[in-house]
Length: 212
Image (cartoon, rainbow, N blue to C red; front, side, top):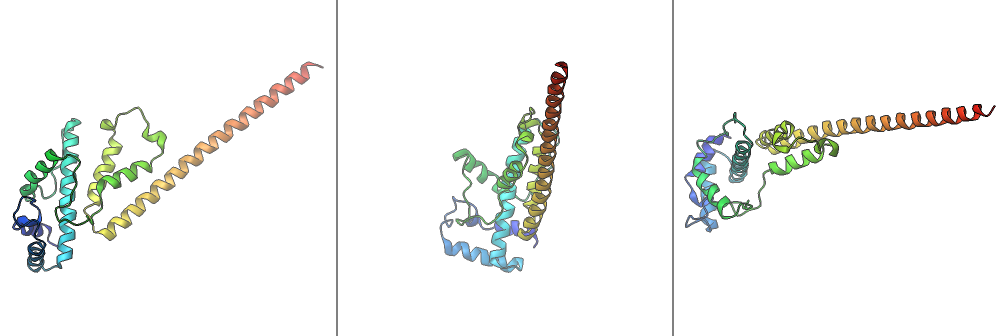
């Protein structure tokens, strides 16, 4: 699907993304708009709707990530994909965030079908052993966290079936690494336990010999 074309087609229909539009609540008008977009994009209405949601959510998340990086003092920040053609919803996003910073309502009045990048990053971070997460470095300076955040942003642009495969492979790698780390820690504990037993045995033996 031509994503740039899709974004520009949606731009022509304010009822699909602007809650202040007079036809925003008119489901018939909105459906008619999606049908028109689908015809011009040579796709089904549902495919266009789902792809728009993913693109829009990716853009919104990328803006937040960039704001976070700026606050953290990052100097080199990559431009957001489709930033120029997405500019028409900047004011809408800003208004929503000013009204309610926690609002993540769906402009299409439907449950979002795209994968939430925040959940992906959260799950990925939780898969890392706790002793790794509780290091002395602050999150602001943790390049590993930033790496996974950027990774999640990229994966979220993939088709759903590819997202599932990538996440499955990533979790497999992390789980295997975690098992390896846990095994090594258990082996170290066992070595220490055996060493302490040997010391105790030698100490008791020397005490016994001293009586003769």
